[in-house]
Image (cartoon, rainbow over all chains, first blue to last red; front, side, top):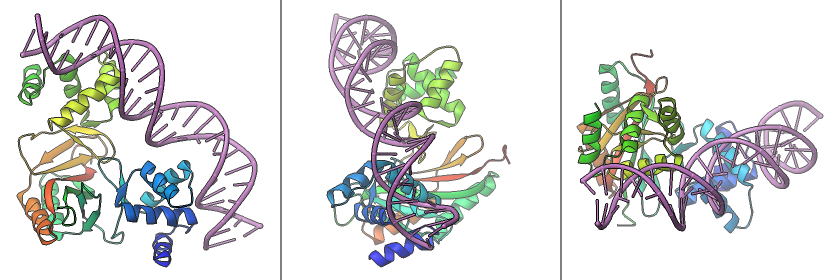
Length: 136
Length: 136
DNA sequence: CTCCTTGCAAATTTTTTGCATGCTA
DNA sequence: TAGCATGCAAAAAATTTGCAAGGAG
């Protein structure tokens, strides 16, 4: 797992520092979290990462599209950073787990609407709130 | 227009105060805006509304589903508050105009995915970033 | 007239910046 | 090593809270 996290970060073109690996793992466990949530989670698990560092790491991860920013200000890991186009996220409001999927049909629908109104699409994503099987 | 803004607020079950009407009109003009943007816009247009009031009004409008919260923390008016289910927003990154539409196909796709993974959907919306005709 | 809203003051919390030091590639 | 990353201190900005006064229905 350690290995994998490191690879993910490297492949995105970033240096795999301890802090970055830890933060990615934290988000992975939390599902989705605010900068504060992440800092707190890390603090509870032995080490400790500076608040400023958390912000800067999130900024870096976002820049290389390794994470999604949700509407409530929290972030979640992008599980398919290489897949371009639409990303849809099923976000469980109970446990905060975020499951992502790619849907070609949604892309097409969005594209059709954009085209008919002359809108040029740069990015699009869908956030779905609800309750997952575990929590139901 | 004044009349309409008032009706929109009333129909949502809120008291139509001067501040609420002004804020709704501000967001309408701005397309999408942060609490600060709204306060600034209003200040530039004669009157002045307290920062705290802006926050509380946004909170109230959100509660009755009269506005959307975007991923960058800004808000936009919901142009179809009565339509339940999916809301898709075309957000122009140049002029900040937000055009909303409802798409049954997207709903179906989302529903299909949710069903297959046992996820119970409460709400979902799509945010599309790009450039509108006016700005292209 | 009653209850919801607003404004004001002030506390909190969140986010940003500059700079010296530390650590990856 | 060279250059990016982190920590620390502190500033700036955003958001929240309590309470008295104001306004809508």
